[in-house]
Image 1: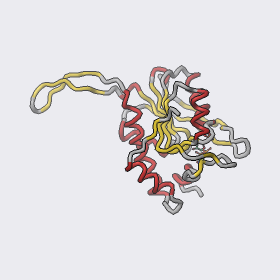
Image 2: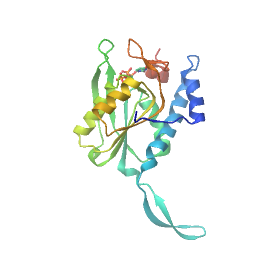
Image 3: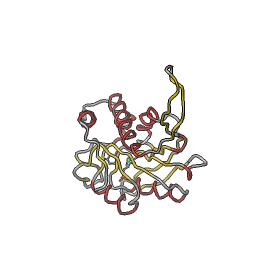
Image 4: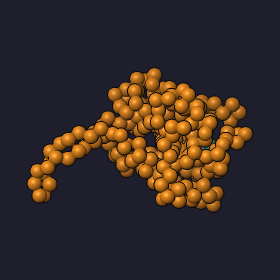
Length: 208
Ligand code: PRP
Ligand code: URA
């Protein structure tokens, strides 16, 4: 599997808290944001930097800087927005697009209800956000839409992934790197990740 798994002890510790069904909405949402920040740092480890000259209080020096304007974050509604603040902490100047999808509970196929991207999306590297990569339907459809809009470089960040979702992404979009805090055991018969953390959207927004 080509997924990049962040098995840092602190991240695994945070995961242990959000997997616990006793953890409440506030703490759950905060930790999703914290893990998202770490995923963002890892996803940016191959970023190209430009060299510029600045003046520190001690004198002139050359420093390396990232052009944040080359990036866009695309959360998949609704649960993906729970990761957005964490990414914006790391890269506050990235632009943001939104994709609205929900999984049909019978077919498990994603149904699109919203799509709005920055005008120059084709010229940006796009980081797609969704806490859960389950069957992989929502992620693959989102990436297909972005490619149809001309986007060339895409990364996918999630908190948990199922092996089935990773396989589907690899098969349909082998050029897209997946960053996750864990690849769990399997999907259950209704398409939920096991052991997982339940319904990410409901736990982030307190809707159940
Ligand atoms: C969840 C999750 C993903 C999708 C993953 O969203 O946030 O978007 O399911 O499943 P998949 O890999 O099988 O497509 P859901 O449809 O529950 O919508 P929500 O974010 O609005 O709760
Ligand atoms: N969506 C979720 O929120 N959780 C899962 O386990 C699978 C899909």
